[in-house]
Length: 225
Image 1 (tube, rainbow, N blue to C red):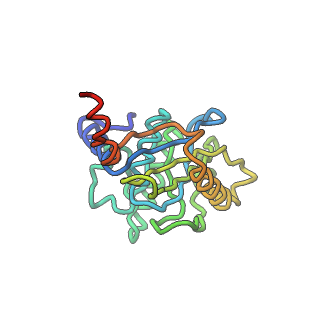
Image 2: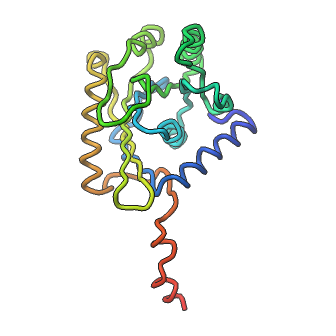
Image 3: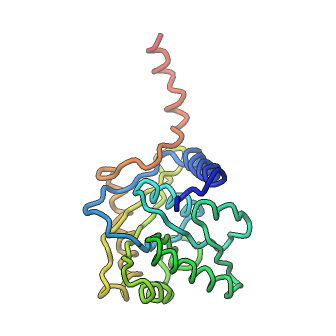
């Protein structure tokens, strides 16, 4: 199994990468302090921005981890299924249950990981909303899975386009699972403070469009002459 399934998957993946380069000045990710746990992994992510799914696609590709992702609006663009998307419509419990069963099968049989926006909906920051019990249900069915929190923070201040920062946290132990929401909330708050101190400790995940003053710096152009 590959993240990008066939030619259509490559087309959709290219669209996602192109969109990130166009919409952001830079996307950063922290330098991992320890190797990722063995697969499968449940990446538990806050959901504060429209581009969260795109950013996680870029992250898991950089980490070399094949993932599926539950998408509430899957029906609007089913080609996301070619890059790991699975349908998770809001008012269709039958389809949701089928997606849960398929996810468990892929995790158990193929060591496929899961990107899980555990709050269940896109909403404004800064609060991380309560998680449903689905994480415990998956872990009960796939006890080999590990839970890794990922915080996403958007900053629109110093540049023409926003910057995005991702922080991959430490593995949440089984004893800490009941506090997963609070752990992700603390991680997000620490990330916000880290961003205010500058991008030290981060690597560039996606290099996007430079600011207009960087692209059209007449001083540099005169210097070339």
